Length: 103
Image (cartoon, rainbow, N blue to C red):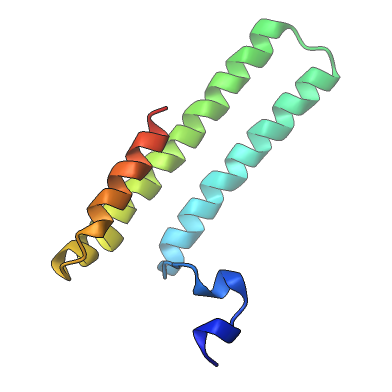
């Protein structure tokens, strides 16, 4: 099968992760999903604003933690491999990604 005959997403970059890395990332996301569902429930129950905001801050911190873990792993693996292979465009991609994260 040629790249042209593949579905659009099959031509996208992918990352093979270890079972442990995948499990750890998914566990973090599951906890974050639970926090978001909890916040939704608080809004549905008319919880006091400060209590909701406290939970939003906790969910935001958890998402930032997820981002830090994923970014560190990306730099250690994908970015490092590409730099070693002479793919300097990866540095530009990393800079653009960091700029998005710092908005």
